[in-house]
Image (cartoon, rainbow, N blue to C red; front, side, top):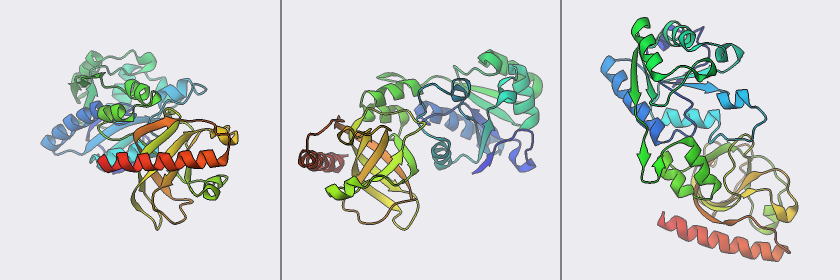
Length: 312
């Protein structure tokens, strides 16, 4: 997959694609429906399959001090799109220049002249341009005039309601990772580099791989049964485990992170990249009066996580 970040400097091989457009936070089943429609159109026309997204997310750009909301960072999103077979990722730099473009200017300067797209596919609720004033009807009119095709995919719904990144965030905030997974079409994953912690887990008999969740939507604090993919380093592979998300109240922690204990694993993971998938929520985060009480609870958590993962 090739990543293009500047619509003003595009190589010829990266022009002419059919591209799905959106933020694609989470790459949920609604996003996947848009991508599948794009794939069919691209294959029929003999063009590359593309996705256009924006970094930073426009919501981050306009409200940088708002609470973190993203389901995945840019790297995790790119990895997910690559696994779906996307050939061109147009990861547009969302800055003052791009945010100031009117809907018509965006259609002309970015879609038509800049990237030279053969066609675009969007969801029925798609809005674009300065102030999000451009509608799907506007996009169709611009496409007809500027020479690119426009296709619209209806909103996907499940028994639980409309599939949206907002509803997925709600499910995660309420400790319902399986409901989130049904909307995502895959388990919700937290990806990142293993960083050095205070190594208390090692002293407790439960060495953990610690990762920051800074900038990401925070799932409900507590303990989860998880599946773990080590993406780099000598221990690359798939494992099972239990993870704690929160601030570690027993040790007066301040900054939320995720600490993952991998079952039956021995080795150094510092600097490796992990992808931790939340399978089941086990219990809320809590403060313990003694280390012995904490260890006993960790024993119980791991036993329950093993049982649940054996059924998953």
